[in-house]
Amino acid sequence: MFEAFGPRFFEALRQAAASRLAPDDACLTALDAALGSPGPEATVAVQEALSCLEPAVREEILAQTHRALATDATSILAAWGSAGRTVN
Image (tube, rainbow, N blue to C red):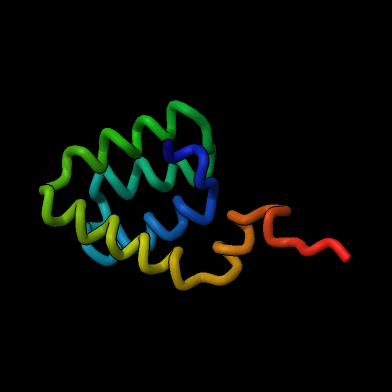
């Protein structure tokens, strides 16, 4: 699932996580690795690190990530790809 979102998703998730977690938290380490070397293994590591967080903390991080992406016009347009183009 996560690999479908690309770097914008991981950047927003990293920023949200950094606002809630200690700098040496395993989740931030996994996110840094995913941003530096994306791939299936990095995605699984992020998913596993997120699953180890307290549910309330995880939900807040994911909600903050969602808010950041939902209000980022560049992110929204990038997700549309060619679907947002009009043909004259």
